[in-house]
Each structure stands twice: as C-alpha cells, then as structure tokens.
Image (cartoon, rainbow, N blue to C red):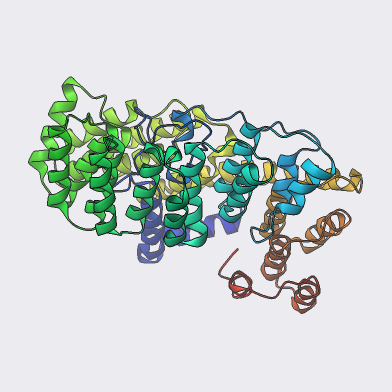
Amino acid sequence: MLPHRRGLLLLLRGGGGGLLRRLSVAVEEAVSPSPLPPPRRQPQEDSVDDEETASPSPGKPQEGSVAAEERASPSPPPPRRKKDSLFRRVAAAADPRLPLSPVLEQWCLAEERPIAKPEIQSIIKYLCRRRRFSQALQLSMWMTERLHLHLSPGDVAYRLELITKVHGLDRAVEYFDSMPDQLKQQQCYGSLLKCYAEAKCVEKAEELFQKMRGMGMASSYAYNVMMRLYLQDGQVERVHSMHRTMEESGIVADVFTTDTLVAAYVVAEDIEAIEKVLEKADSCNDLMTWHSYATIGKVLMQSGMEERALQAFQESEKKIAKKSNRVAYGFLLTMYADLGMNSEVDRIWDVYKSKVPASACNSMYMCRISVLLKMNDIVGAEKAYEEWESKHVGQASKAADLTKKALASASNEWTPDLTNVLMSLNYFAEQKNVEAAEEMASLLQRLITPTRDIYHGLLKTYVNAGKPVSDLLDRMKKDGMEADEETEKILAGEVH
C-alpha cells in the first residue's frame, strides 16, 4: 500500500478516533432511514415523476397525486440519445439560469422538427433530477403555450409543485385559482395540499384537506400528507387522531401510513406500540417497507432488544427492491457492524456488489471503509480502499479520455453533452492535472461558450494543484460571469 493510503486510514482510525467518529456519523446519517419518508403518489396521465420525493420502497400507489417513484409508476419512455436530439440540446444548456426558449424555438420552429409530449415529459423529469426546476417549468409551459399540446390535470398538478419551487407558494395558489374547474381534479388538490404541507402552512393545509373531504377527494395520499405534516410540526397526538379518522372514513391504509405511524411511535419512544406493529406484520406485511422494518430494528437495538432487532433487519432486507438500493444496504451494513456481526457485514456487502455494476459502488465504499474501521479491521479497510481506488481511478481516466477524443473529433455543429465534460473535469481536479483540464476546456470552447460549471471545474483543478487563479478569474469575468458564492467556496478550499 502506498504511504498516503495507509496514512489516510490511520488518520481515520487514530487521533483519539475523532475523525473516524465524524466520518461514521456522516455515513450513518447518509444511509440511515429518515424518520419519515415522503408518501408516494399515484401516477397520473401526462404527468412526470417527482424523483426528488421518491420513496425508499415499492408499495401500492396512492390516489390523488402527481408524482410517483420512478420504479412504482409507468413513465414516458426515455428520450432516445441520438447524435442530435432535443434532449442533448437541453442537457447542454447546463446553467439553470439560462432560458430554454431559444433552444426550443430553434428545434420546433426554425428547424420544424417534431417533438412528442412523452419526450417532453421525459426531458422535464431529467431537468428536475438535476434540480433545474426553472428550466423544467419553462419547458412545461412552452409545451402547452407554444406547441398547444393538451393540458391535462396531471400537467396542472405537476406545475403547481414546479411553480412553488421556482416562484413560491403564493404564485402556485394563484395558478391553481386561475384554472378552470374541469382541470381542478383530485390530483391537483393533492398537489396543492403537498405544497402547503412542505411550506408547513398547517392552517391552510387543514382548510384544504377539509374541503377535499367534503368533495370526496380525501384519499390515503391526502391523509398521509396531513399525518406527515403533524409529525413534522411536533403534533404527535394529531398523527394518531388523523389515522383514526382515516380508519373511520373507510380509507385503506398503505405502506406510507405505516411508515408515518412507526415514526410517530419512535418519537414517543413507545416500544409497546412498535411491537404491536411487528406482530401485525407477521400476518400481513404488505404494509411494511424495508424502511419501516429498518426504523423499528434500530429502535429495538438501541433499547437492548438485539434479537428482535436482528429479526427486523432480516425482514428489512427481504423488502429491498430488486434493483440496487444504496441507502438500504448502507443502513444494514452499519447496523450489523453495531451488532458486531462481522460475517453479516461481509455478506451484505457482497449482496450489494452483486446487484450493481462496479461503477455504481463508489458512494458505498466510504460506508464500507467506515464500517470496517469501526470494527477495528484496518486490514479490511485498506483492502477496500485499494479496491475502490483501482476501480474509481481506472474508470474515471477512461471516461475522461473518451470525452476528450469525442470533443477533438466533433464538428462545429455538434453540441456536446456537458455531463461527461463536467465529470472529466472533476477527475482532473482530483488528479490536480491543470494541463489536461485546460486542454479539455480549449476543445470545448470550439463548440460552445464555457458555462459557469465549466469554469468552476477548472477553478477546482487550479486550487487543488496550488496554481494561481487570477488569470482564470479574469477569463471567467470576460465571459460575463462574476464570482458567486460557489466560486468563493472553491477559492476557500471548501469544495473539492
């Protein structure tokens, strides 16, 4: 092992354990189940999944909603990644402050190229996944205002959430009020209720909820939103009273109802109630997610009930979705380490690696190394670090090389995918390779004007390499970009 590797691991392990403790806490916070996962919503016609609020486990979709976890709802087919497509052009406009209208007008009006509504919805989903909410809203509005495509209640409902994120809750309420009654269907009311709840407007949420009940629109989704709101507001008793009202109204509970109840019992430290949830799950566990079992297991372990905790963790693993779930497996790694079950730690790690490609394991390696250090297995931690380094560096180097070749051979009409460019610049920053970063920036400049993200990638490389940055900042300014908060953080060494 190279000296710097051993030094890093010993630093994590030694020094009174302070750094290791901080790393362990950070990892546990990243992988532990949150007290309250957001309720999933029923897929709507012509709607786009809200991946930001995706739940950790599959279950029955709820009525009266807009966004749903991608794996739980049918979504429009992903846009085909052709050499030139609207998707690529939108993706290349990586600065979220840039307007999309020139790109859209060029594609549909100047070039008269077709675009279907499902493809637009897929691009909106892509933009939301990258937190480019303003551009997602622009595209949604352009879809109906310029292309005159049909506006569905699902479109209205999803726009309410985008408007709230971009312009604030008041503007979203104005938009809702401006809609004709035939578009104000159940999913629209559910979306507005969610907006009120996320803004913690308890009174307005209660008023809207009662209105929904009066119109027969109070589905399990609406009840779950209110239960979440009360729990987050510290009104635990009202969580239970809302659940009782739900039962009395004949509304069938779902996995998110159970998750919220479990979270409320955890807050109240009501072990007896938690045990009852487990007993009920023995006969019917369709209402339990991996998250519910994991939360219960952790509480039981902290209460000294290790055997019962182990049973809950085993049930949690059975509920993990077939596709990879980093949070779930990361949580189990940490919990089995706390129980001192080294063989289970190794088994969970092997299971996770068998389900995902090597390139997808990067974030889990930190968790793995931290867990091994907590178990005082310095040899195992060194081995895991070496394994990660060999995979990470090799893959990143190859990707950067391919991106550079693509840029070098591109024609002036080709618009590059900035995602690959930014990943390459991050790799060069890690390697402190200013020359390679500048070479890629030079190749890119033949095709497009460098964005702020490109300059920030270069800036990180300069800072990491200890090179002067004044000339680079001047270039950035000449391209119309003043230093912002992110720039200052990079200069201060707070962003690597």
